[in-house]
Length: 166
Image (cartoon, rainbow, N blue to C red; front, side, top):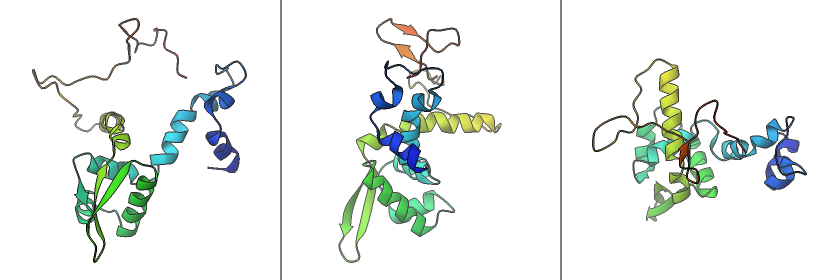
């Protein structure tokens, strides 16, 4: 990310959006500030796979290496340290000599679970692969992700709905 984009990403959202508080037609970058910030935290190669592996429960370094084939140990170490700094993963020592850790997703990291599952499902669909997703425990039907307005008690995921991205 270049210096100008980094400065914009660090500015409060109200400053990035503009004087009136709502994005205008030329503010495409401003309306995507949340996505840009999310990608700066977890968007590099391998990071989402590390989080996905940890969503199954706490794992040790060797477990993560087995769960993510092709990931070099030095890259895994760097990703885990970055995720710890971002507050998305916690490390608990289980051995002092040599220092060894068990890694788990924090509550903040667990919030990524839905987005990761949707992204994985989208990737499988677009490649013609088997599409598997969460199922309703009672009846076994695949669940669908929908946008819901709790105030109006209405689904708003159609193209003609009054849906506005901030």
